[in-house]
Length: 212
Image (cartoon, rainbow, N blue to C red; front, side, top):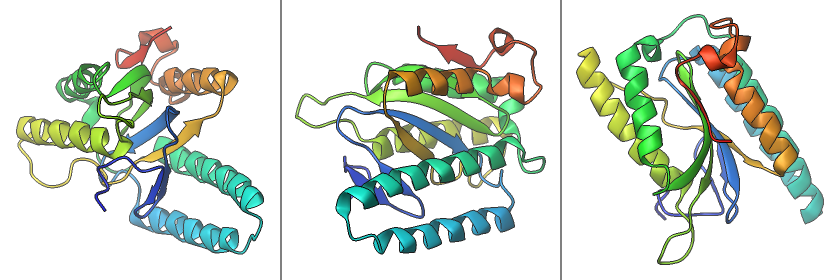
């Protein structure tokens, strides 16, 4: 089974869930942006959570608790990235950030409808709705992220005169449940540079995009 094809649910080291037509909040980060010890600790917490969820016999309750657990873990990963003081910050380079921004916008209307993004020094937030395909089904999150990250990694490494992994292989993502949550998430995304004390107003951050 190819992980680049559309699947409702799939797992690598982290769980990923893409219902038909759902809007997604996705975060992907630079390789090495989280200390290995901290990453291993969160992955072990994910494993323990999975074991606990498997013990819930009621399917509806297990689905509900899995959704809540997924959101808690997403928040923990996100907070860890925001506070990471070590590791690479290649996205601070204006040329690299511009490359990523162009790649995000280029795929808008082809693979997804792009609602918002923010390019931070060591990670990227995006809010998008994968589009339906002419052949049926939807564009898969794994496929467009593979394309986006592969292209930007090659170009950024060439510009930075380096080799090796540029992006961490997996992303963190969760489904946006309703319009109220959509607004909360977009507010969070565009204000991330303010929270990180990079600017005083979100409009001042060059690498923020919001489609009203």
